[in-house]
Image 1 (cartoon, rainbow, N blue to C red):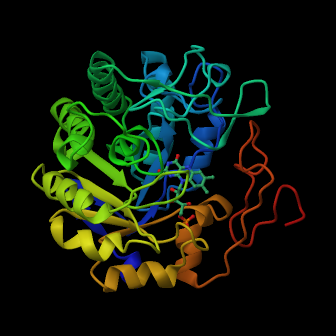
Image 2: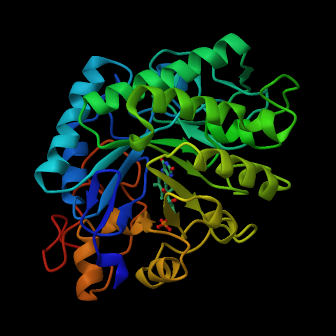
Amino acid sequence: MKLLTPYSTNGLDLANRIVMAPMTRLRSHGDGSPTTDVAEYYRQRAGAGLIVTEGIWPHSSGQSEAWVPGLATDAHAEAWSRVADAVHAEGGRIAAQIMHGGRKGHPRARIDGSVPAGPSAVPDGDVLHLIDGSKAAWPSPEAMSIERIEETVGQYAASARLAIAAGFDAVELHGANSYLIHQFLADNTNQREDRYGGSIAGRMRFALEVVDAVAAEIGAERTAIRLSPGNPQFSMVERDPAPLYRALVTELDRRGLLYLHLTDHDDYAALADLRPRFGGTVIANVGENRAPTTAAAAERALSDGHADLVSFGRSFIANPDLVDRIRDGLPLAPIREDGLYGRTAHGYTDYPRAGVLSACGDR
Ligand SMILES: Cc1cc2nc3c(=O)[nH]c(=O)nc-3n(C[C@H](O)[C@H](O)[C@H](O)COP(=O)(O)O)c2cc1C
């Protein structure tokens, strides 16, 4: 299987082409530092060629939900260094996903109690986890001023610097699935008429400014970005994604980034359309909107030439030894809703490896 073959890019040597996709699990301490369970969770999954962490906020004003971790202070970096060390000790590689919530956030979900701000004052239609354990609708966000945008670009760069100081191998910027960079790209969330909105060039300006600021800080060869072109999930509307994403990927291609992580959707075959426009490494995610990614679908994405690496999300939650199971053709354990989000090790670090009895004894 090509999936199981090694892959090298920009000095990053991966044991196989299986990537653990970023997945928010809400296990941080109150200050945004990852708990020791987080280090154990990623250590268990270090058989992946590359792990991309859950989304991490670069500044407390970008915290989307309660218990989402942060990487904005030296104390955060110190805590994350234990996570990176745990993965490296097992021979794995790990990138930090920097995820700014933008309009997604709530004063009662945030350590700094701030009101969320996005490109425009358009609320998200969904609900989120609050600190007190309840859930609420996302409130209406403020529209970001130009100064606020510039400040935020700087926060991504500062967080990326901390990520490298913490020992992460790379930084993946979350430009997908309705978070801030995506909010600037999409039609419904960006109604600005200044230089950050309107035309294609305007809507992709924020993404490129963040990429450039982060690349200037840590090097383009350690900077990556995730995009979900035309993803209709999470109340995002992108009426005509192809021209925007073609222009964006063409610009990204010029920058020599570590990789582009793309999700494919039924509405727009982004991988087939955009892969030829990006000369560097492409990670495909083919599971969104559908059942969890399968090894067969992943292998197909590689043999079709749509990607160099493939990310698996949900299957990694339930199968810490996913790579071994794929290699040995073993059945995959199903993911349980119980403990998917939550503050304990239950449903987090207690999924057993194949052939090992669960700590809960009942799976
Ligand atoms: C519990 C959960 C949390 C997720 N959190 C994130 C996240 O923080 N950042 C991100 O880019 N995608 C996130 N995703 C999307 C996954 O990275 C992935 O794209 C999705 O699960 C589809 O892949 P799969 O079919 O292999 O599961 C999350 C998905 C799940 C199931």
